[in-house]
Image (cartoon, rainbow, N blue to C red; front, side, top):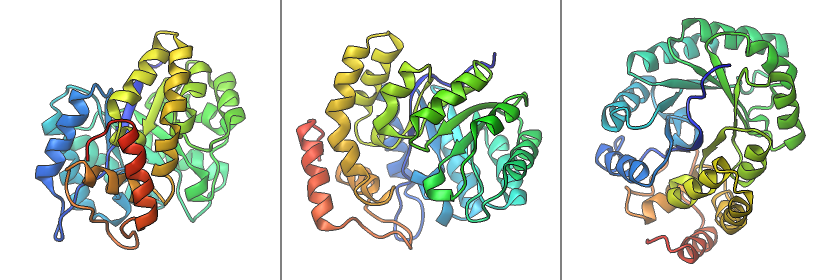
Length: 295
């Protein structure tokens, strides 16, 4: 059995930006807010962090900055995936050198590799990594589904330690658990399925919602860890309207709007992403207000 990188709630953080680059002052304040709220891990330079439009050298700089400011209070997981295996190898080496505790590697998008291609891709990444690797399956964005039987084969690699499963398919998660057992930690990539995932033996969630409501998100996973699924289900239901608002437009547009409204930097995104539409923003702020989140 491999030791889970974290158990509970990890925030896939937004990257605050200025008109000319990363807003490191806002990023530092946001990291402190997350840690003070009890979050169990930080994921930096994932999809929510706009990694697709940030240059590799800046990605490494953001990872190193995050590692330094977090100072080992919680694990720092760095997103290093692209659809070019050689680029992923470089990104992974850079993240390891920057001090990341683990790397998160998405299935190659657009290329639509075969399952054999995925095995070779992830194996090469794990071979060069000096830290645990988290597979990331999100077919809605990538066009390819990392099948449970493929994950079971990859789980035999000593550094492939976990999967972020964001297919939204609970039956697939159950099959993962049945085939992999304790060989790999399973994290939900769907905020709305946190409690069902953990009830089936999942280790937690890599979350967008916890950018905005980290204390409430942690209360939900803490209840799961304590076996109090009645309380956990209450939180899942209470947070669902906020989750729906945060996905009313493509992530991370709503998350960036929410975090900006909370005072952590400007609502600046890199094209092709654009600021949130007014009607959707109003609904998002309304749901935040119902939870007592100050804006």
